[in-house]
Image (cartoon, rainbow, N blue to C red; front, side, top):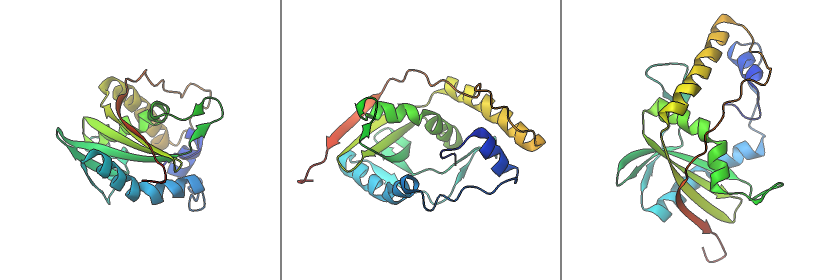
Length: 193
């Protein structure tokens, strides 16, 4: 539930000091919500895997403050995996065309958090780039990263419980490791599809 936000903003929301931002008129958020179903359909079409939509928020058995709003659960030849759908623009100002690797790195912490909550060992990230291409990748669970992430989450939650605002000194960054992308497929979409 962190969209264009800071830890301080999130802390204020969780301690009841401010209302959560209304995201109903934020186009990128609404675009993502409304394309999730199509993303599931398209991923199933190109992979042959099934994806079950989950209608409820998943809650960690160990930490009730760790939740995941999962886009789906995929079933492939190895069993079940987390399914995460994204819809992003096609280009960046710095590097030209966006890649699945960039989107995977940007969403790595969220996906690892969701793998922790759901107790799954891998995820599929399925991404639409504008309306011109689709790519997906398989992401393995990273228990070392999850341990570091949980340390941060636990410390933040303690601040919420104790009603102590987090210090915003730039030390709240969590380095994402270099990720080995297990590529799926990149499909350029043209008028024939």
